[in-house]
Amino acid sequence: MIANRRLRIRGKAAAFAAFSFAALACGTAFALDCNGDIGALTKKRQGVIDTLNALAKKNKGQLDPVASCPQLKALVAAERQLADYFAKNKDWCNVPDNAVENITASVQKSTSVAGQACKIAAQMKKAQEQQATGAGLPPAQKLPSGPL
Image (tube, rainbow, N blue to C red; front, side, top):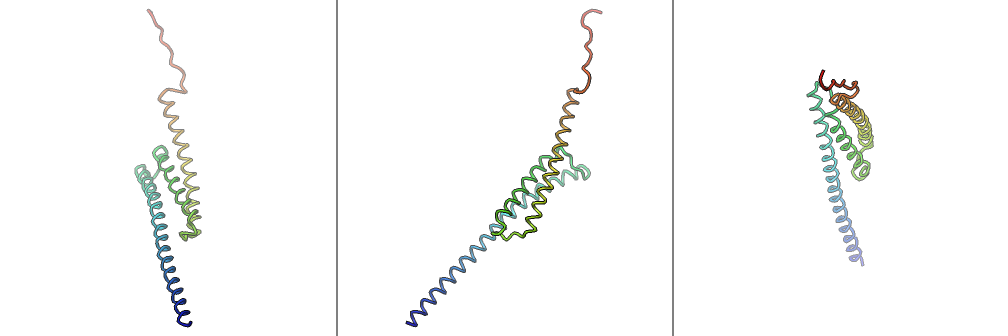
């Protein structure tokens, strides 16, 4: 009976050890998935930021609204993906609260900047089109036709 009990305890201990090892291995795998996903999303975001920095460098530290509008929209999209991932996997990936707050604030700021830049770009494009077509100017006088 004691031998039987020892066997059951050893069996339970072995099962618990196997379960613990499997959980640890899976936890490590999940952590690696989180790190890989977050790394890929962060790399995508950083690529857009690098592009925007290059555009600003070409223009003496200022962003050209027309050239930067599409890149700013891409930045907003990349940051939203990262924020959504953080929100969805916060507990699973052990994402700190301040990281979620920081990316959420960054999304809001980037959205505002993108909106302003794209609005200015649209106004600039409209002004260029009006200049090209002569809109806003009085119509040109017709020259008389026929013999003088």
